[in-house]
Length: 539
Image (cartoon, rainbow, N blue to C red; front, side, top):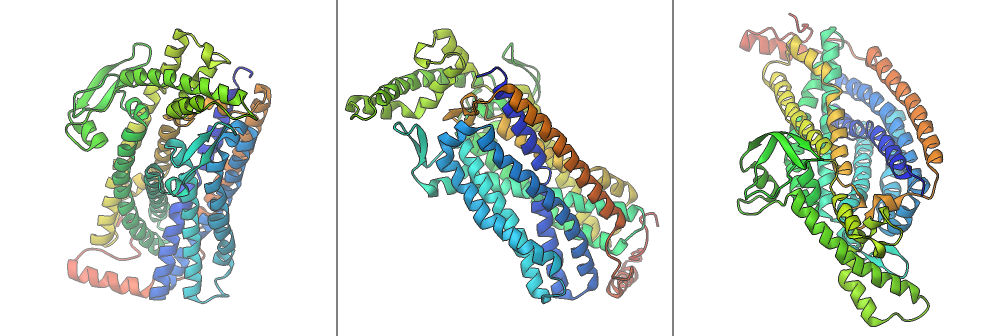
């Protein structure tokens, strides 16, 4: 294998995956917000809600198309750059992806056309049902993809077959109800809901700052802030659940995220600030909050969270145990066509849970059984992902998450109790905050995927073994091609979104809605406040 093939393949997949995820959160959240708006339209029969639904659905459609285009490219990479991974775990990983295509993607593709072109051909309730089916399909799509990804983080319901040299599914229900996958799903879709809420509030704030489409903007902020506040609180709650799962199933990832080099006395403290030093294997300038990490990671005051150094020692023992399984596996393979010795089979079964750790030695030698003591120790330290990127990515993500809660709570309060009157500084902040949820989402995925290294499937298949037998030049060529192609798509996406945002909604509703005017007049009479629906934020 040529030098650099693993790094280039990882870089290419990371680039395409993180680019694709620019579209996914907005699709997940905006589909639900559009469905909520159309439901209100069906219930109230007020034209302003139809106008809102059609406007935000237009932006959803642009984002949806680009998301589909980039998602298809990702799936091709499994066969192109990760063929051994596809061979090794395809029986398990392929099932959720196939169901996603059959159940979710076809559902979206079937109803999205009716959603956009069926306004005058269907009854209002029927069209609202179609819009909800598009939203449900989008979220179903995320469910099955995250079930596949969750299995990579916590492989359950499968076992290795020494005769086929592949992982084979033993329980579909264990894969389906994997606790990591379920926590990841609800956390991810909630983050998507927050992303769409921030986007809707930001665009609406831009309109209010320019005194355009005031009724649409204020109602949109009211819907998005309520939906976004519930979603932001959900993100934090479910993020805590994800952290609890990681502390039990991916202890090295947890230790790296917390830059916890030594096992601390229970309950462990939380490192609020630190500068991790990978070479010295220690932190500088630590600021700790007592007990917090122990409560988050173990939900107790007595359980320890193992540190990196202790986990490395445990992984070294797993590598040595895995070598026993690897030796038995080679004997079974040599006896192909004949009945293998029962003692050898029993030896393999007793130690097969750590076979993947023996594969880590393939980085240093073609035959793990010939590995030296130094190589075994080096391989055990390879199980530690780079600490400082994980440490800071996680903390920036969490800080942004709490910022979203504060933002949503503020706009919800102004929308619900202050007559939808928003100060100009708050509106400017909302516009500037539009990119923030995408940054948080990308950092979250970086933490989850980078923190799994050096594994493609945690504890089962190292990343270095998963790549295709390609030349580095071939991967570099496709990497450059993807960067150029995706850059063009990004320019098109931004151009279309900005064009339709500047254009604004279809002007099929008068700027002053009689119900809103009456409501504002009553509010003015009862409070003495200036609550005119056409007032600018400066008034």
